[in-house]
Image (tube, rainbow, N blue to C red; front, top):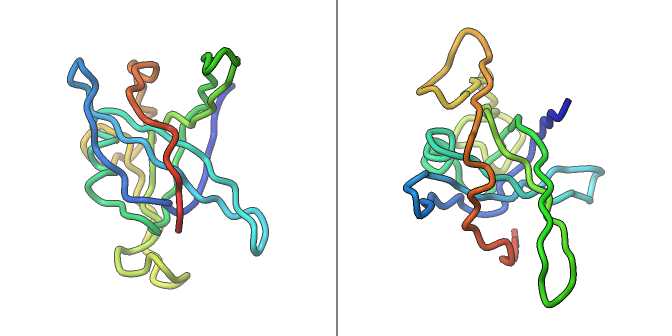
Length: 144
């Protein structure tokens, strides 16, 4: 079973892009707190309606909970074999109201979004069939 659930803050504004085939996607990095002054930076990618909604409602510093799966890909760069690990997001939740991105208060009830146009009574996993169609640039810095 390959299931990942993470909660963290966006390190930059997500930017909606499109593949050459017209499929919407957004790549973003989450800062997931490990200890008091330490964080892991996790690369994520979302597709289609999920990507469109994340790009519309989230900004740098905003907290989000994502669920998805790990995708490990291999590639060659300058003759060296490298690996890239990303979370392919299948659903997400708003975990704070829009005015509280830099503090711990003001949480609203979690609202799951699974890519089918809104909230649903049951959690359905949105299957992305385009997760390997990645035209993104992973060499960006992620300053806070």
